[in-house]
Image (cartoon, rainbow, N blue to C red; front, side, top):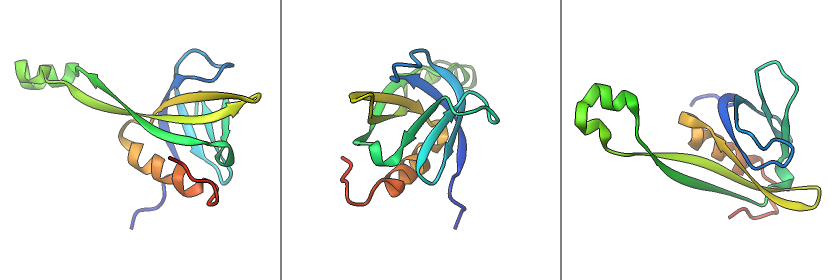
Length: 124
């Protein structure tokens, strides 16, 4: 059994009113919240308390991968599905949706988010 993911590289895609531009950074799964940082040792830019998450969902986007094109020639033009995580929460009594790309760790990250979510609140 592998140890539980505690942090990972991410791409913040937007959605938070104070941080409208996307950035590459770091996500840390704390005991009571998810923290998104620009770099590993920075103070958190965005903190999402697990008990304020109202919904977690996937957004699938098709991407063309340049590496695949180089490796496989024309067969590399086949679209590759990429999964992003959308976290529905609140900021200043306003519903917001924050987009995060957990890259290759999407399943592990979502499993942690569901697990740490308040047990008495149902997340769709």
